[in-house]
Length: 207
Image (cartoon, rainbow, N blue to C red; front, side, top):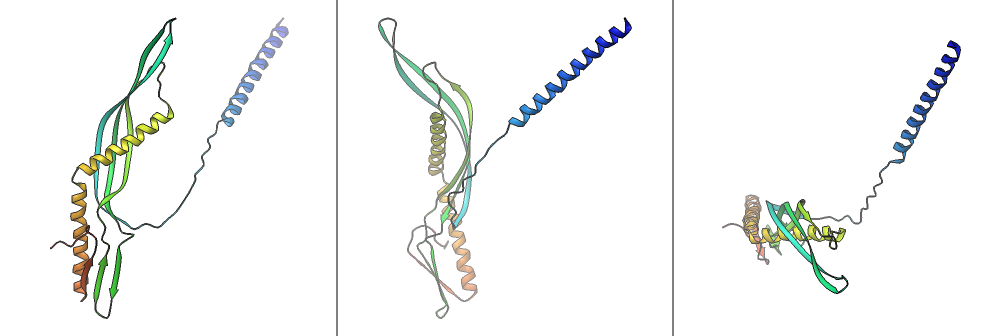
């Protein structure tokens, strides 16, 4: 009786251990099947000459609502409007400065003259932003798609650009840029060079 009981217990224990080992093996196999893939595409590399003189932090909360009209037959045709609304907070940093690629600097060592041509106007060089979706309210027949999220992202960046243009960032960038030109002029004169500024209505030395 004892031998039979021990044999039975041994069989049960072997079965439990076998099932546990099988479960661990299957779990390991499932973990091995989970993987991530990423492809980095470097499309173009180019040299740039840009000078950032001012950066501004902008934050805004805005809402976007779109409607979709649907005709339902119940059994008579009935027209219904289904809305979807997104409330988005956008935060970003706007970099303002000068694109110096068209700036022409000529040095005449015989005449000891430094000539600056095609001085640029201040402009928005880059906008680094993030979106925080505060509320997404959609309807059964009007849901958010990937295109909607892309549109919201694009619209948020446009709003940051509009806010920056309406502020005094460009004027402050002009003042900072003019200070840089004044510094170049001071160094050139210290070295015995005269500075001549030709063309362009953007950067100007501070008198």
